[in-house]
Image 1 (cartoon, rainbow, N blue to C red):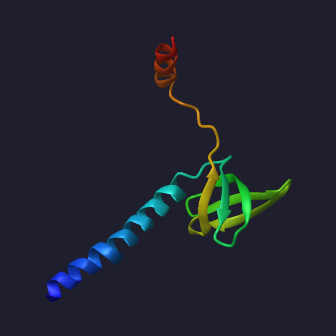
Image 2: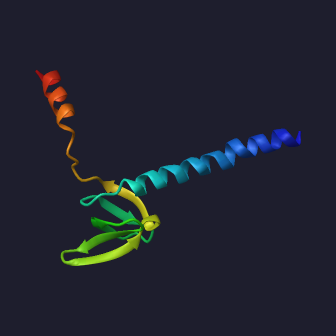
Length: 96
């Protein structure tokens, strides 16, 4: 009975929390200049620079602030990323 209780706790609490943490780490590692983000404090801005542990965010024209990567809550919109040349050629072939 106790093992069943631990099994239920694992699938209801621990596993979803680990999944959320992995997704947050993936999002924070994929940050790039041009991404529009929201910090955990609710500040909206555009990423202008990315370091190993910090992110430089422009909150107003000419005003930049530095945040730790974990302080980024979510990405509102990602900057247009250049696709590899092969993927672009394949997409054009499919359209024709």
